Image (tube, rainbow over all chains, first blue to last red; front, side, top):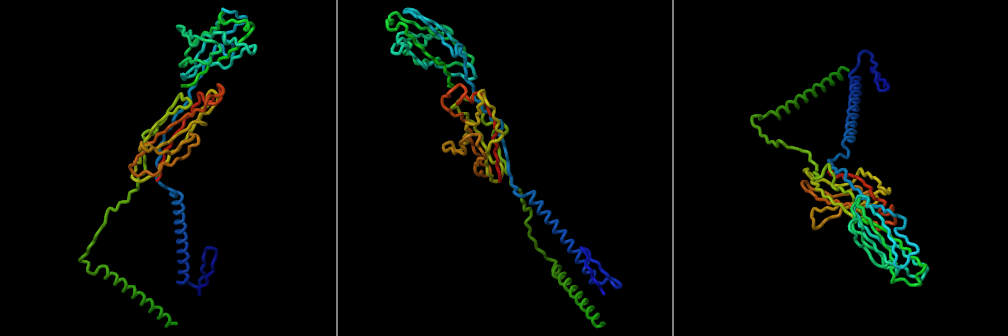
Length: 203
Length: 190
């Protein structure tokens, strides 16, 4: 007679006398199931590993071009009379002149195209035109004097100073003259204010 | 009870006998007439993994280098990318490692610098792949290259002219002396 009592994961066999073939069969079946369960677990592990290692796998190849470099240049200059008058004259009489100079030093690391431009012209009292009587002469006196402009102050608008390389130094002379032939009684006590600007742009 | 035992034994004997016959039949089936045989074979069936690789005529070095750029200036460089593998690949290019160095007036040139990536393999019919701010450039698809196919690309960097600056430190003047470096990454995938 065979009595089987199933425990937790373990099968116990109580035999009156010796173990029977039936009991052996039950024991063998249990072992088989354990082996099968182990195999299934291993297969699942392999599947997981394969998914982990190979999911989304594909060939790829890379190349790189590093340190592409871009740098902006710099363009600047100094004006020895920046913010101040280059030439001033008060009580100017017909036939007299007044002279002033300034030095421009190119800075930065780029060559610039330089220009001198009139930005404001004011004649006082209103209605008088001393600027039309005064002459303005602008010269580059860095080397041999070169006249850049010579005409009435009223007619001056702008003049090109050419291209200046970095560190170039230029000296300009401004001469204001009150020509005798232009003097009229109405200009007595009149004044003219001329504002000019030096500028540089990259080519 | 005794009869039942005999019957079980008889069944076992019958089963063993049947198995014996089956083994004998199998043996006959396999070995009968073994004097003749005929075989064919298809050996050396080779399975080789494909190769995906590409060459870059400027690999490891810059395609474009520009110093002292001024507004409205452009700099151009070219590179050839070739699929050197034996399978088709999908190619793309992107930028990385962008490093901005502000200039004298604290402007960052990457905020205005533009890049154009143009496929100039057929010079008469250039194909624009990307045109826009360098800083906004992501991965740009270049299409599928068959094995052995190469494409020529023209890389153009432009410092746009923002007009006359209002002062010595604003507008384009803000970018004076600023610089940047970046990397172009070419990728091919199966």
